[in-house]
Image 1: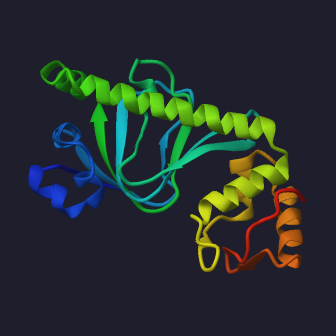
Image 2: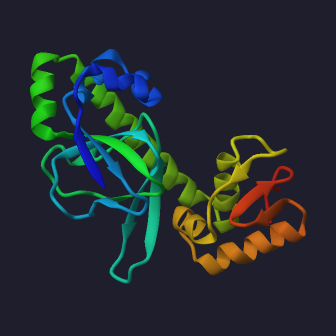
Length: 220
């Protein structure tokens, strides 16, 4: 991992994700620290007390939880232009762990920096509130899907979403273990379902890549 304090507004041109943020958000992240992380770096540990917000400029981060036996469930994956860590800005314990899924670049902002900025620009508090509400709504929707769908239903929803609708040539870069974490079941169950779908001609699996060849059936 390497760290570098942001020298000024000129760095924004190097990151398309930063340029897509609101003008107020751009001004805020200019006050943070630009940090680069290797794949597999644990940024946030569930249960720890932290006061930092991570704004993702490049790469992909995974938020997840684990029980005492080490079994994990993935709450979501976040990419450029998104934030993680905002739920602990009240000074409470971290509600999830966060790790990098690939080499990533983030701007790290402390709670002190954020509060000072809100004091100068009170309207930014509404942007931050909207972001927190959107994240809470997403978590609620994910929980509803988990509760109302069986394992295959959750697998179908995940694969369809990850393929981004490009059924002719879209590739999904998820391992069976990744999928198991995302949909809350065992890797063995995922492997069995994926093998059946491959036999049925719905998917092709090769070298860690999954390709949907046609829309997945609603029931299996």
